[in-house]
Length: 335
Ligand code: TRP
Image (cartoon, rainbow, N blue to C red):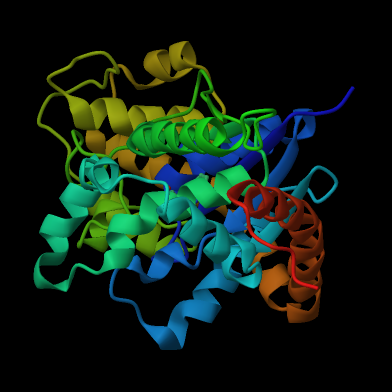
């Protein structure tokens, strides 16, 4: 039986944190044997906001190493860097020319980021979703694991593919329409400083998140100072207590205990008793990831060979799709 293909990507901006891991990457890892997977470091997306040229390459390697450290298995998955495959940029241009401008102007993320970036909004930020569509459509992906915030971009990807197929492929569609891959128990991890907001890379305060590469001291300090409430006894299901729910959920997921076990264990605890427990559990859960990460980063040759392999596998597929798209658009084949 041919496996369905999964594609996803992470930008090499900022550090990966527990929200990225528990909400996304851990799910990729758990499901990976069922699919043929392509995991991409989307470094072309990373320059849609002002970026630091001196750290871009290093951050790209870091994300690739973290993929491996989190358990991406090369038996089932390929890891590659978006900018290493020029078909991403080329397909973006071709798709740009069939994408109505107002589709892009309507994207929620564009509007939000444009406000944040103020004077500094570049054309790439508007075009970001077309590049993401190219990432997905080049590989004829069946499934794309996406969080809530990326659903609209996946819908747009389907709209672009549909429009392309309709306008240029009357006989047989060239582009496959991808489906979202939504898994039942992806944990939604909230900010440590506000239990009603998602843990996020772009929060200006590093105290709001636990990064996968934080040291034990940093983890301890962040949990010690995180927002709590003044109620005694801890419970998951009080909507007035978002911080309690978030921290208990973190403890549950990182310890591997069930909700019932955690609820029973913590029902009479105060924060002073719970915080050291969560600290220790977090440090222990991240330790194997951090060790694997260090081992990979210490062996640059290995990491480069993983990315070269990934690039070859990805390019073989991408180049076919790109050629089909160009043929459908009527381009001449170079002699
Ligand atoms: N836009 C995605 C995010 O910020 C990253 C991304 C780029 C992506 N290309 C992709 C995700 C293709 C899935 C598939 O999370």
